[in-house]
Length: 371
Image (cartoon, rainbow, N blue to C red):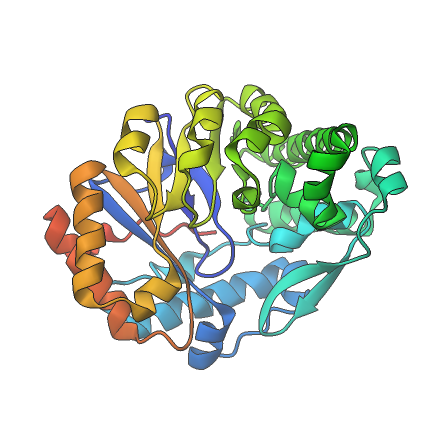
């Protein structure tokens, strides 16, 4: 049985993760994700507050999203078997969930995923910050009500929330001052990051515990370091690595999400986390270095949606050939495909990957979860 973690995207929104043995494996899989604007072009989609707070509405929407994908890509069946969708917590409040537990308002949009609104912490507020009483917040109480309803109606509380990462949430709470603190007030930066890490572990344990009580095994987590490229590798090791090390020790299986940035400066720090089980990165990264350094991880290069739209077929081929030759087995993430991206570009990408890895194109499509 594999010990690796792999990504999945519930058709749209942020990456979440699952054990590799939960789905299809192969020498190469391509995980696609589409923006709300893409779905609004093909169906009625409203990502407002009701979508995030009503499990049945969300389930019906996933069914329609899957059907839309299957209509547009009938040969690829990117929507899987949408009629089998069940109610889950996947994508509830997406990236805005954790900051909301600290008091930041969640701002919903019909045509996009929610964001946070709130004044950045002042110096004094950052220094006095403590783990919030998150269980009594409206957003967590609402999640508990949803989990109770999901268990009543579907038996098991499936799905994954986006818990962000230590630096991601600190940035949402403090803004760019968190980077200034690293240079000018390191004790303040350490305190903020420590509190965020403590909160993450308590929140994840609470949600995972509720899911496990319904029969859904957890024991894994992939942290999100989307803004790590805004600091140096040395600053990562000094300020963020301590929290990531605690998270890695806390969860039996641990991975790191980086977005589509060059990951090389952070490799020494990530190597100190132990045998991480998942790592994603941009196509400018040193593939050979990553293959050598993380032999136990599912390696997942992220192909930029801008590159998908603007690069020539010859340029895309060169990128994928380098990936095949230097990493080989991998998970390619093709996320945030927008309404303006020609559908043929998506088909062409998968057909090219199928040619280069020598498999039928339909075998590149991961098993679609029931969400």
